[in-house]
Each structure stands twice: as C-alpha cells, then as structure tokens.
Image 1 (tube, rainbow, N blue to C red):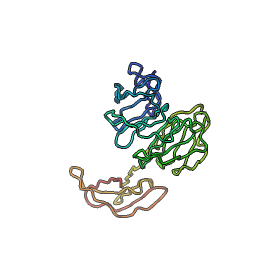
Image 2 (image 1 turned 90 degrees about the vertical axis):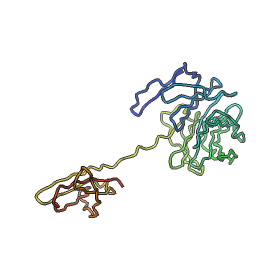
Image 3 (image 1 turned 30 degrees about the vertical axis):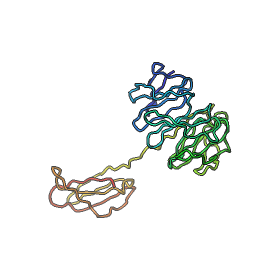
Image 4 (image 1 turned 120 degrees about the horizontal axis):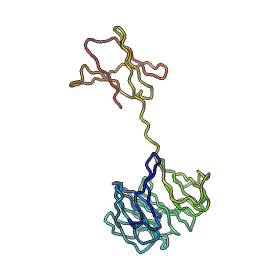
Length: 272
C-alpha cells in the first residue's frame, strides 16, 4: 500500500508506504499544519504523517475507520461505518461519540462554513446533517443519491456527492435541493472527492513609461484600474505620493500624460 503526493504539475512521488502502517487506506484529511491523517479500513489504526512523510499512530480504534474531516479548531471526525456512528478525536487523540442518530453506513464527511457536519449514508442513500454540538438536524438530501460515498462543499456552499454505484457526481444547493448530475463522463465507482479552489488571478500591473520632450506618458492595463499610481523623487529613501489625476481609458489601457516636473521622478503602481 502506498500514499502518493502529486504536486500541481502532476508528477507523483511516494509520500508513504506500508512501512508506515498503511493497510487498505480509505479516508484522508489534512490539518492546518499540513499533517496528513489516513484512515486504514483494513486495521484499527488512524495514521498521522508529517509533511516530510514521517508517520506515527494518531489513534487506535475498535472499528474500521472510513471518512475523515477536521473542524475549524483541529478536532478530527471519523465515520464508523459498521457501528453507524461518527467519532470525534481531539488533537491529542482522545475519542468520544459525536453522533449516532439516523446514520446508516456513514462514509464521507464534510463541514459547511457554519460548522455543521454532513455525513453520506452509503447504505441509507441520504446525506444527514448535524449541528456543531452533534445534534441531528435531519436529512439534508435524499433524491438523486445512489450509495453516496464522498462529499465536499465548494466556496459558495453547494454540496457535491459521489454516487459510488450510480457512477455520477450529484450537486445540491445550500438548502439541500437536488440540482441534478454535475458530472458522469469517465466515472466508475467514484468514492472520495475534494474541491480545488480556483487559483487567484493577479491582474497585470505592468506600468509603461514613455518620455518625449517635456511630456511623459504612463500606461497600465485596465485590469489593474483599481491600482494606485504613486510618484517619488528618489529611491534612496522614497516618499511615495499618490497621484489623484484620473487616467483616460484607451485600447484597454489606463493612460495618463503630464508635463515633466523638475528633478528625477519615479513611478509605481500600488495594489489597493
């Protein structure tokens, strides 16, 4: 059994192997310190791996652990499939039963932005909702599910569920309305899923300066129109001053033309 690390470039490497006690691994979760936790369905061990890949035993259970999820204060929640429970572990590995109502073969777990925990009932074909204190808040979703396995929220609060036997990923609104099949092509027994956030797009803030005679022309892309143009008279101990003159928009460029003042001038764009 191996656990692989795959960077954004797509080239994988072995992160951990059997020598680190991996055995029929299922659920996986990462804490705020980038430690990786692995549920071993084939044993009663939950492993913890440092970012370097060095492994330790985080907790020994009396059940085969499935889905894992962290809350926002570092507690780990584990789906106990066979006993129809969700078990909570503190960061020190101390366990307690978090929920045991209306669970039928729980697998995937996910938290919403309000701290409510959702559990995919693999056997019951529902997604159950629990408060941060563990109170059962009832069925969140039941239509469109065919043995749901992994679940995940996007940043807008929509929930996605992997239908293991249906070979689809179903999408639900923040209030649990079934929005239909999100994806089906190329899927065969989808299990755990995750949401990858969109990369932050940094506007092109290239500042172009053209001087001719006693005129200077400054231009920068309109995508950086919220940026602030500043000027300084030296760079050894610069005092940057905001220029409040509004540029003219020409061919998707912000353009500002002024007469040159005496002495050297330095210009820059500052992000808002």
